[in-house]
Image 1 (cartoon, rainbow, N blue to C red):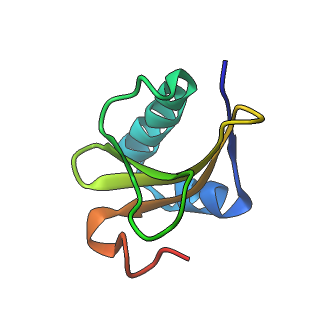
Image 2: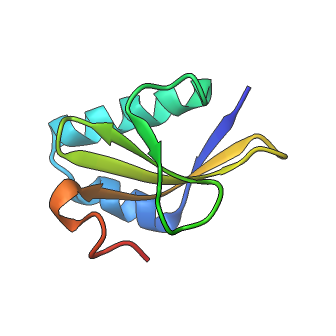
Image 3: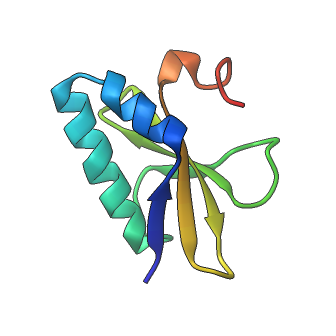
Length: 89
């Protein structure tokens, strides 16, 4: 089974979200435990192996890294679709 971790940035992102989006983000992170049998995920282009995004609540994205050796997913950022590439770092 895959373990899903978050960063401090992810925790700050969650704190800024309204309640309904925050609940949807937690549900999306919980779904990542079934990686790679997760819907609405795509590898991030230009970021190298292991970087993915998951769509949730239509316009929101989880940006995450998968370490298949240790079976750990680290959610790096939660962002709105319009800021997806502009804010990713």
